[in-house]
Image (cartoon, rainbow, N blue to C red; front, side, top):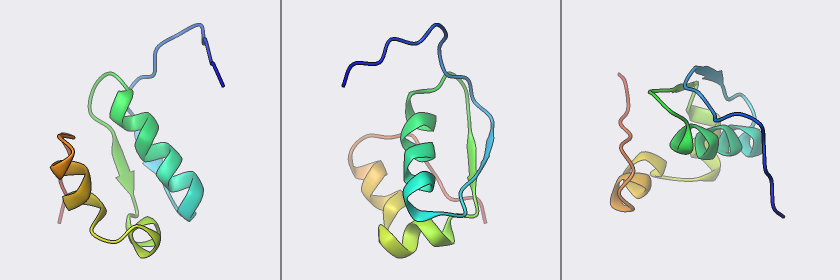
Length: 66
């Protein structure tokens, strides 16, 4: 699939209450300009254990807000 959108993605607060859509939002936030906040993270982490650690190991600039 090739997607050529008219504008770049921008940071924002995202609601991730579903596993698959939550992971899609995280992927989009990784390429967006600025800092995004994805919450709640519990649902996504149930399907993708140690998600923050794994993304950091790949070089992503992510952290968990307590």
